Length: 392
Image (cartoon, rainbow, N blue to C red; front, side, top):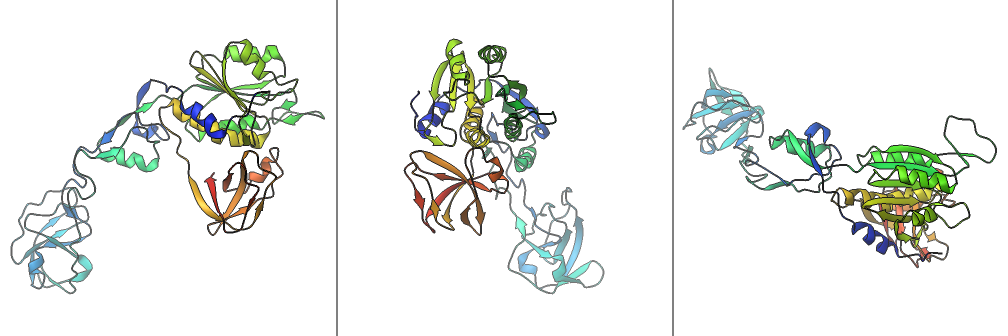
């Protein structure tokens, strides 16, 4: 039986692989969840010019107690035509360029009409209400570094730099399959002793959450020839992702198939719960990651192992949202010889247990908001102790 290696060692092996070298340019509207492969700097100051932060009147601060003549109206997008001098002002809209000579905006609700083309100020604030050129970013400053996982708000930032396309890492080709003669696809009739295949649909959804659409290879029977044939046919993919068939039982053929086909087994067993029999193999720059067949093990190990592998192939590191929070109650654990992950809920910033029966109990995750990451050797966590929670 293969030795269980520490979780951090397994993760370092995954992070030590080579990234795929290829990139491509895509329109910004198609770049959501893609990995940025170029640094994006701002071509101008942001804002590019001094402009009004609100609708009002552009004037000289020193004239704010006078009756002012309105000499011009400046909508957004139009260059001012007249200079502000003593006793004058211009009607100005939000986002419009500040006219020469003006150094303050009086909010429109703080003025009243004083005859034709004149106003007086009813209330004068010390605030200038001007957004100055370069106050957000200076020309040439980094906007987004390469390796950024592009989110919706990044679309606006890229567009604001005047770019229509961005260079991103090519997505790895991924093929997935589930193993197990007892499995039946949902929607079909099953006999006693059979169970519906859930892992494949879970993995497909987890992949899509990273922006990757995988090819689905179906269900593999617990037969050596079937496993070897599938592995041979999937060699054009950068990653083959399997669930089930990775343990050390008589019908767990994936480890032996990988050995026979000349794969290098980087690890087959991680000191983590659930999912200790995760296997990671490589041949000619192609990778196979085999996850345990129990649904919680498959889900958790995808988050812990598959995601870092996918992001590494795209030349970046996975970005996780992990918080350190107080336990809202006592946690009593079985003697913890492994790094352990359990589903939890978060209420008012505190962490609470969920009724969880082990690695087959995927339903425990129905209302989970995070996974508590419990260090090896921990058998209890007292109320108010700090606990790391990875949000899901």
